[in-house]
Length: 506
Image (tube, rainbow, N blue to C red):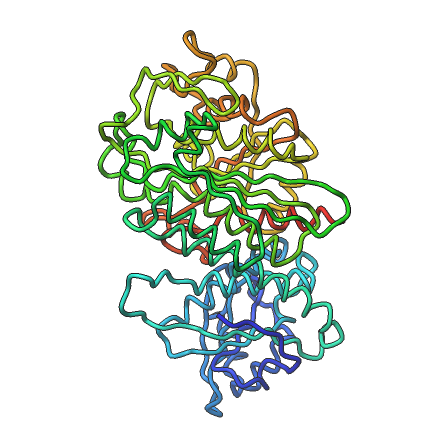
């Protein structure tokens, strides 16, 4: 979707639909003055609908009016209670509007900026949120489809008299946000590709293509090199597949003088059958999304390089396919990892932490980052604990978590900090190796995973983000998600971590 700023009043723009937001109203509230022009363009139909109580301003409420002059339509979208108006509400409202117009013959829309701005979301935040909601809400994964219902292709954010003087700053904010949006859409596209195409080598080739486009150094370690490096975790998990594992490293040099290095590591299981500890059949089809962490890392590096963020950014992808086969690893196996620690395999379906052991240890030793952020669809326990919309963060560093939570709040990607104690560390200790990847105790699965990964994070500040819930949506969970999410991959983590990287320049 093409998104731009326009200085004109919304009703003066040459668009198919003018979109205006309205907060939830009391029964006798008058029509807001900022909607007066839209009401006049509809020959008073908007005011009449308001007086009859047809427009209440509730979240996700949509009212469409046709302009008698034949110059298109006016869509009023509810923003919810005044007290709760913020950037996330605007993001959802913009997506609601775009989705309501799908298949309705509307190619262009103009968002009336003044109707979305409030004390909870000033003009710059509103511009970013409108762009997010419109572009992400309009997204469809069409690679394997021959038809589409059609939808909004172009959106303008109409400044009007109220915001024309801010044009320069708002244009800069929009340009930056559009780069982030492109990275999210890119992440969704590659995460949605099924496993018969998206093999570990395919992910490696995608990283090489991206690196060439961005001018970023990319190194791919194949199975021979992984064996030489003693990356027994990746080799074990990938041993049952005809598509051997890969570790991929992207190096963006940074544009600042601080010399800070941030490593971002992602789990890239291109398909997860569970291995010998095979998953239940109904869960299988969604396991192409088990590479969402690695795909997010590609999106984050793309955004970091495009926006020229200050810190040096190292992206590491741990890529393997977990299948049954003659070379598959088994419960009871002991594997030795890059940093020399050994893993007792108790369950081959706890494979994500096994591949991440090598990638995390490599990133920590090779680059000695000031901060290491890892993203993975690691545990079903995360979904049980926090649901489908919120990711968990576990960290050894309060300052790092504070910055990530601030980025979470700014981007609307929910994050909740979880505790880690010696109880959880004791659970993953092994009698025959250093750590075990599963235990006989089924409680605290999310934190067992974090305690395991801690052994490979290195001595610096680190944050483990388990995004098993919000990384993708299904037909069942989609109706409970924000309207800017779609069925399939969401690109979760890209907006949040990119915001965190941008904030390092402050």
